[in-house]
Length: 485
Image 1 (cartoon, helix red, strand yellow):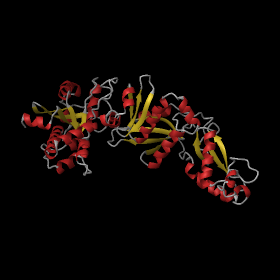
Image 2 (cartoon, rainbow, N blue to C red):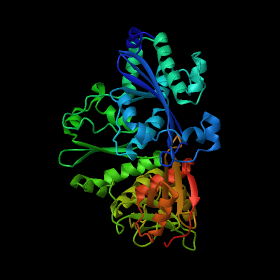
Image 3 (tube, rainbow, N blue to C red):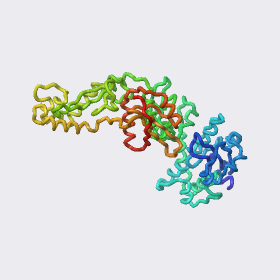
Image 4 (tube, rainbow, N blue to C red):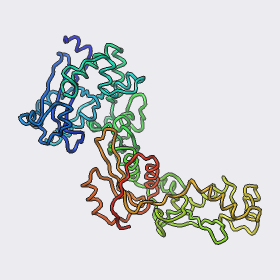
């Protein structure tokens, strides 16, 4: 290809990257081959190298790539080729298929030798989805077939796959206007104008992964805390020219984020960020009036309605508190309230919505008919017009959606969450709806369990997050050995 053609297809310096690795685990596996196609105003150059990983190679990887341990023994280590590789990558747009995989492995390898690798990256899977949304499959084999490309040198060798990406890039430019591709690239890479008070490199490490993030002001005040299925996309979107929040742009001095394997971890991180902020006067007022304050109320105020039935079968409610009994194992609890006032307000709303008797519910101590009956919003349980059994049945029906789930396991469980690529695993250890901690592997799990016994208070927001997650069936549940309660 001529220099003029490379300028046409690559208006900025680019490097098309593919790696072969000993496996898919960032922590334990290593790079075994690197293939690059460098494109800039001076033309196109190729570079490839085998890398001695220092770890055994499985028969599966050898079968997939054709690379054997015998081929890797005389090869240089990553440390030995790191300087040349960094020179070839630096100052270029990093382009890869499932870029998170290749970028993550390179960042990990550079990190092990003390090099902080940061570079703008472009995922061709995401780009293909943006350019051709009518198609559902965008893996490399599918794109090769769809666009009639030739895999010279075979698939699953680094340089051959890097060449395919460069061919794919040229093919797209022949099929679509350059401006269309440029706009899609800009949306994916995310290069918004950051606030001048932020370090321009502060967000270079933002991963394209689930998690939660927080924006802080100059005084450390929490401005915003949210979860996301793509941290990089959503954080940078706050500074995009067309949708920029001017106040947030002006006031943000620091951004933090925590990566997660999936939605459960992201929700828990979001809750931690929200609770890291001081409880302001307005937040305290919100908690007292049934608002959505994110701080954990004291156990002696956290309460629930417990249903009990006297011998007559007459269902009654009594208010119980979290410092009196464990909400995770107590029977017939309905609703979780930050204090007595919120619980009583909620019960009045329930009574009005279902025409329940305020006298039967203990909301008022009427001698005869309750106020709701006089207002034609009670069916007369207070004066014998409706039987206690009928009223009790309607009460149980009204309460059903508020019921607190009993902890149904004999001991703690591990809720195992994995990302879409199988590269990250979060193990959330839970007992009686208490989150005991989150680790990434079995070694961390054993360390966490050995640190018991645990004495956390019942947390209503953690309960809601965990309960909803178990309902979805999106996590693997592994029972663990019994712990002290």
